[in-house]
Amino acid sequence: MTQHHLWRTRLASLAVLGTAGALVLAGCASSSDSSSDADPTATTSTDSGLPQDLVDAAIAAAEEAAGGADFSGTTIEVLGVTTGTEADAFINAMAPFAEATGAVVDYVGNADQATVVAAAVEAGNAPDVVDGQGLGLMLQYAASGDAVSMSEVIGDDVLAANYNEGLLNSATIDGDVYGVWNEADTFQIFYNTATYEGPTSGSWDDLMAWSEEAAAAGDAAPWCMGLEAGAGSGFPAQGFIENLFVKKFGSEKLAEWASGELPWTSDEVKWAFEEFGKIATSDTLVDGGPQAVVSTSAFVFMNGMYSDPQTCQLTLWGNYAASIVGASNPDAVVPTGLNFFDIPASVEDYAGALDVAGHVTFALNDDDATSAFMKYWASAEAQALLAASGQYTVANVNVPLSAYPNDNMASSAEILLAADTVTPGPASAVATAVNTAYLQGIMSYVQDPDSLDEILAGIEASKG
Image (cartoon, rainbow, N blue to C red; front, side, top):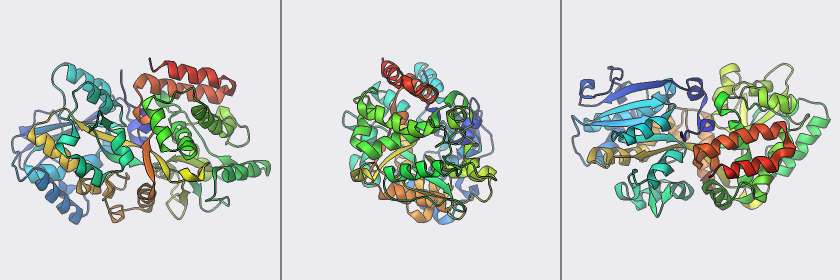
């Protein structure tokens, strides 16, 4: 069963679901040294368009990670989940390792990554490195003994100096860290700066009180929401529910929910669904009411903030929302035409608690070249190149804000760096069967709120 969590997949990945792409990154070695069927045109750091000072720093970090070793003639196979042009950010950030060491880094993106990895492992031909969407695959292969301990390869002291404790804990099994977070998406509330006059601070109760007042005044609906995304339908609501949860009950409880320790039938989980439901199942608080929520595409629902007349005013989503709404609305540029604020807390003590999503990279091979690559990939210098793409916020806390080329990602990174706690929620960590039940449960709940107890019991039962 696939453990690919569709809700974490960005616009481009969902648009090309079921396709695969491959590129080869070559340093001193030529592309002919690779056994891949990839595009024979090598992509290196010199043609990435990234700032040269960041590229030079990454090359130096790669040399240090390799201990000066020459890996010419060695191919490192990287299986990612990101495909199409969106994969370029990862490819370009990996290229300095190839340039510094002579290795060929053979990146292949496949949206059905989990199936591909499982087949390769069973056949004894596992990729050296897997860059997965969320924690699911890493947890699976760490538990099976196939994944390599990053505590041993990189060292716990180095990891602790570069990563938030919550992210390290999420990738830890029996005391060893097995995964390296790179992309780390934050969640926030977006609004049209030209029209929104509601609160941007205060508590969640304050924002809900404004929502009720705005709806009663007959203005544009307070909230924009659309959950239709094919097989991933419901995924925008996962970030909504989990962030309401962490701002009410804190990161420790969120981690318990993600790990399965806190059952889906608990009062805490039920509260988060019901609080989300106050908006999603309302005829007045959300644009079009609940039937529009389940039938409107996740990639167009924010257009209501920019329509004439305006039909909705706010949305809670990941930082990638800016690029999605901006694709249809040229004025939606952070911070002038579109802006955001941190999700208000229901309990003030948890105002600094964040739920995050993103990519986790792990190794299925412990040879010298792969180990050196993982050391490089965990470095601030490598992740600064991901940040410089302008597409992602990154997990390494030592990446400077100056690496981000746009206000959207730089401001999102500020939220990430300022957080008291950073914790991935269940959508990033649960098995595929549970995540599927989670998504289906969300859609069923919006259409039939009275069935919530049954829905939550069904998700709990899917844990097996």
